[in-house]
Length: 442
Image 1 (cartoon, helix red, strand yellow):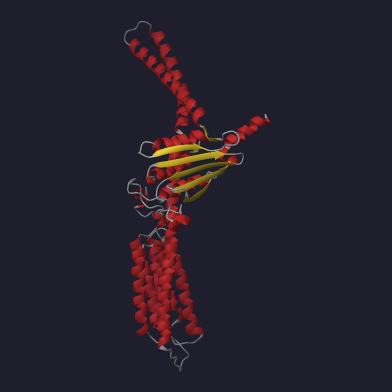
Image 2 (tube, one colour):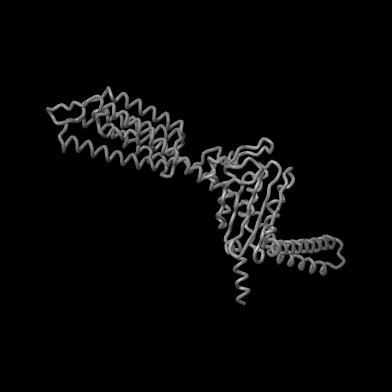
């Protein structure tokens, strides 16, 4: 599933051009105010014209991009990388004319790298970081003097400049990597949630087919009845006219046949809705295990001590898909057997899925359910893969239904992974419980 849905980056993950334009306007305002303050308020000697020439380059680029592309335009990785390279070069030029790395604003060289880390691939971010560090290294040795009081010289020790270089390098490395990891996890979570929504939507569409069939039969019944009635009247009017009688008779019989088909379809939909809309817990267990019994792995169903009447819930495609996914993965990793236990009382409904496979690695038990985390060591005999996005989807769907999931390893000999799913009884019953309450009140 991951290869199908996420092999190409989503356009929603690309950097918006409008974001870069706004950030650059903010930088232009800040740079202009700084130059004006240093030159005309502090009266430090400064190449004002050259500085504003570089600032004007940024302003012209902003205006060109604003008029050339719509505000909602999303940049491809290469275009965004080129713009950030320009921003880094423009800032390096300003620093060259204002003291190089002796300028305390040198730390602003890290800003384009951080922006790149949040939106561009790691390879492009690494290249940008290398270019910025190369520029910072050149600024250590090649730069105009730091603006200072006219007539006085400010001698900054080389060890301080080396410390500034190390600060820029450390900030780019740490902040860039941190921003990339946070943004990447956010992107993975958003993509996985999108996949979850698609799975749930597909299951809901399948469950809605019966209702759609009944609605179609109801809507088509009236026009077909009218067609049949008109055909009968035409048949009577034609009498023994051999030219059209056979055609009209055929039209009437086919219309009646269509009505019979729709009647049966309505009947089937009603029976399906009546018998499948409500699902006892035992039937739910049978339904989620049936597709996985023909793979050479035994599935033992073990009902445990139960208190009170069996819970009957409304059919929930998300619950069926989620439980089915957990059973499928248990079968994939099991050596010989999967055991499913269930019980209920007046407050809780519990299902546990146990296999005799290798179990969950201890180092990732706390991270199970995160997207793209492979949670178990593969079983060479089963051919099963890792549990990543599939388990995330199953966990998300079950938690949306009100369930609490616990993942661990069983302590019995020859037993592997254990998954426990627990619902509060009133949440598991859902709308069915409301119907029972209404009946009791009536």
